[in-house]
Image: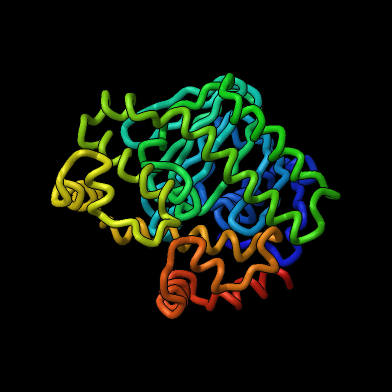
Length: 324
């Protein structure tokens, strides 16, 4: 995910375009290049759309309206390798989201998490609007246990975190909001946390156990334990196995089936936490070594190597870039 240099609010509307060119210009300049989706309106001649968007570090906000239209991430488009996750909140009208062989109907205020790396489709049946929050998968994976299980599950409008998130996100689309980089980073972190809270309501262990069995529920519990205790340098697979009441080999098998490992998942949690601390004004005066130890690393050289491998830059460079 990339963000503009000044993170300015961008506004665009087809009202400003000749009617005969609206769809073509929208598709060429926004749908295919910026949004990376296919747009198929019910009626080309009556197509209408508008958007207010803002790209911030690790967060892309988009508030838009559109006439009756189908929007899709097709097989050819997902070849771009973008696996961002997008939380879509319906603001007006009725839309249906489809992916993974499942359809979710969204009434006013409902939300659903989508994966940009999968073939997806949205059908809008009447003129209306929606709010989209696009976040890198790695960010949410560190905050939500079993993030893939949260994809394509309805988040009802009465979810308190979702309602708070909607108002908070819309406020960030104000032209005068958050011009200071430090405030921007703080607000983005708040958005991430609110999204995690909203998604957590739909990934409770009991629901996972019903849908995918005891093994999935135990994997979720294992990941939750790692996330909660990742700052403990002595955290080991043996400690996790004892907490779950199973053998170490069983834990290894859980992660193997999930396509990961205990050590890999633990390392990812520590690195993501370190990155957030390095870019947060709250920890601006904390030495890099202190942050490394606080997130669970026992060796600063190992931390630096792992951090550079994941983020392509040294920890100090990430900090310097965030304060520039």
